[in-house]
Length: 488
Image 1 (cartoon, rainbow, N blue to C red):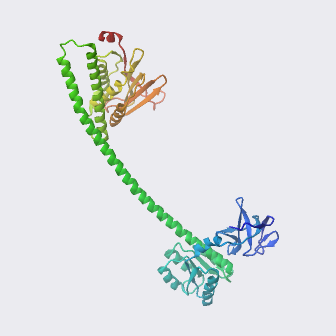
Image 2: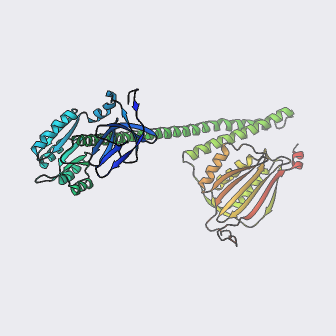
Image 3: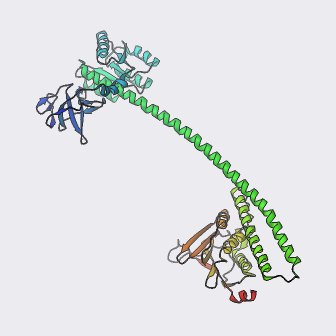
């Protein structure tokens, strides 16, 4: 951060003098340590001008290096660094240990003394040979390694490879002689973080070392965050597994309760039904009032409805607990539908009309379960079948599948029967779908696979991939006024 009182000069564009390797601002030659601001993404970024082997750069207040080049909008400024501003650099360099490797004794003494003045928070260790450096690297990690590239026995490039094997996250800065550009390029390609040319310029050396230490610190932070993320992921997996087990246990408990309640309800319902029938037999020869007769009729209807609900609960429990067993057998679906529909209208104020008769439609199903599905779905149409409405059941063959379409009007709630019916049909490798239309009309579609011996329906002559629906039978359930009058 800067102080509130900052004096800004006119904005200029940086100019780079390639021949002298100088950077100019408004004709003024910039030098290392000079404070300027540059325009980056619409904001002014302050910092100090610095230079390393790669060229000029701006060291920002948070110790981030931004490369400077010609054409960049800049301005000079006067500000001072506060203690808070330099704390990030100090914190990243504090308790950091670097290793300097060089066979030159004088340089090995001069560099640590210089760093003690410039970076007192950095601890410096030295080694006079590559072998000694490798021994130190095996004992402890370093924030950075500075090594001369030309040393006897093992040169800096070979040492660089060893360092990358021992401590791959440790940045390495190599010192090269003046004009040894090939060695510098070879070092960078070999994985060196940076290189410094002799004679060593102190500001460049300190800036490069600070960036190397900060890079090492950032790598460690990334590793720690990755480890924390992996730990959190593992703990989350354990938590998810625990919640899944708890949910499965709760689901199992629910199924047991449903089964138990259904069985407990079944007994009193059966006794109530038997007692009602016994009372009707005892009073059969007596003259009962109309209200008593209607009461018995209402009781019977309620008992039938309760029996149906109990049976639905038992079926739901069986399906959910996987104790549902299919007893498949080969049967004619056309005749099965006819029998079920005739049973449904028998003794009611409804009549059944039939069209078609194109032979049997063979399927391999549990006849009792399919009968239950059709009965439950047709039961919901009884309240919808009034004088002005009707229910249509159509049986078709489409390819190697049979489709039963049930259409009615005056939609009533399907309740749990639809869920149970869908599960039963799915256990037969079929599908049950519902579609609603305007004017309270709806259609139920039951699809079942045909028996393997049954011939497949022909395809379209125009498009061989399109299956042509082949209608086998159509039944219509309508209100029978005569039967209703006779019943009354």
